[in-house]
Length: 529
Image (cartoon, rainbow, N blue to C red; front, top):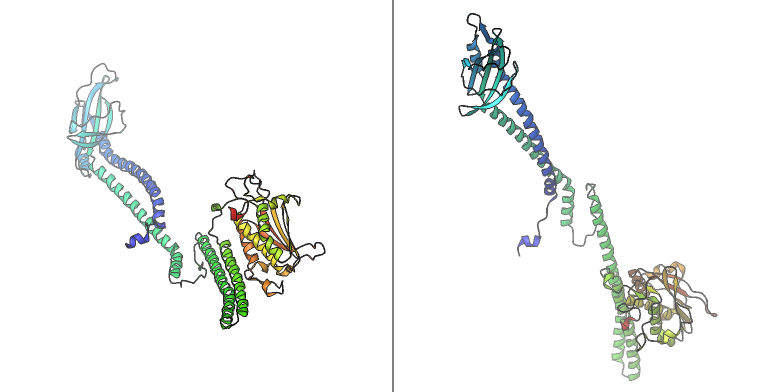
């Protein structure tokens, strides 16, 4: 089989998850920051180049003078200005100084004369209209097929009372150097951002690896463990956020360890309990084989049958206890309601013959009082009779309640001496439904009642060997009671009619206050379900 198929679907690691969550936000912030930096750098670059561009314009504008002989403007030191301008970096550079004669009062009484060029090229793109005197104007244009940046400065010189000269000084240069400076700045900022992202990814990757190193140690320690090693995981050095997970794993390991220990004890005790009657039967069978007379052989066979009955009872109790302790059984998959009164009544009817064999008085007290005795002789499945309404409905499984009560009643019959009395009564107390099994037997001392629910625990009640059980009855009853949300309490029974009080076992379950439920909900004898 393919190893990838065995490994299952590939899971996303913490590193990848963190980077997937952080990188989009970081990229967004860096993009916004880079754009703001680009705008700021653009303004700085443009201002710097514009400042360099306006200097020759101002020099030309300041060097324009009017010749008093012919009242025409002339440019002094034009060569030095051109030399200074040519020393700048742009490849294409152009200067222009021209003038136009206008009316001195500024009125549009006569159109201005055509511009006359004093210095430079005559066809640079003109500045936008409305430019004020002595105010530098910067604008973009296209000259001879390539983009240029132009700086312009106007100056008005009065030459007579009616006429003035409007001087225009311009300097233009190609924008290639500017664009290259902006591109270099953009690339530099972008490269810095890429390095920041790279460093951040490396730090996240290494940080997660360092934080997960204790988990890796845990993984290696688990990989080299023996199959049966259920020691808790070492939590030293585990990150604070992961400590609850490790504690939960240790809790689960502890539960599994206790469960396996309980199962081991159960198997050991069950093996011991089954080995003893088997050894006795093996010995009895040997005696039967050696007997020649039919009489003694029959006695031995009857003893073997008695041992087989006890062994079958023990096996049934072991299976019942295993079923009651099985936590994998879902309560939602079982009937959710039962009539505790009907279940207790069925148990009493079931054990009446056994009580009569020991000349015991097995009594029954209905939850509605002793007067409600007519239902004891009425079978719930009798033709023509409708099922009775539940008297003591509880949220539990009827079959499991029947098993729990059967063990309580069976124990009472077993340990109560000949001629004794056993009373099973059901009552409603507040929000609980209770069934009480009281007898006139030897009882259980208060100091030993807690241990009586342990498996294979036997009390000293009853001196006869046939009264000695496997010590599973109370353990089974308690397991079924807890499985259905109930509890069993042991106490002293009250003396009755001159008979001493023995043990009182009370099974208490939550009472369900609802309308009577019939149809698909079972309330009676599990054997008729």
